[in-house]
Amino acid sequence: MKRHPALQQLSREHHTALKLCRQARLAIAQATQNEIAACAETICRLFPHELNPHFLAEEGDLLPALSAAGESRLVNRTLAEHVELRRLVKLLGQTADRPTLQAFATLLEEHVRFEERILFEMAQQRLFDEK
Image (cartoon, rainbow, N blue to C red; front, side, top):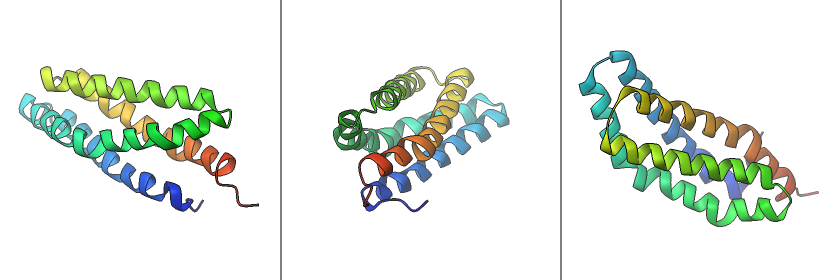
């Protein structure tokens, strides 16, 4: 489905997130602490400039509008995942280990898929339906 212009930039930003997931999975597959640490460092370096601004944009505009439209369940899930992803990034900055990197990659990929397939679809129907 074609994205409404209000969602296009957010949707494009998901590409960066999926690239980080792929990088994390490759580091985990390499099975070396050096690869895991390097990937964790990349995530911690990019998160404040790439992913967190994306989260903040959603939290500032999209999610309040969806909540007002009665989609509190989807909004609550999105917010909970943002909180958990932020926690995992903080943890990666303290202890770059395989389980934390795996948890981050898995949740981020699931989060992006959820937003693309469910949240953004609902936003298009509820907020941007141009009948």
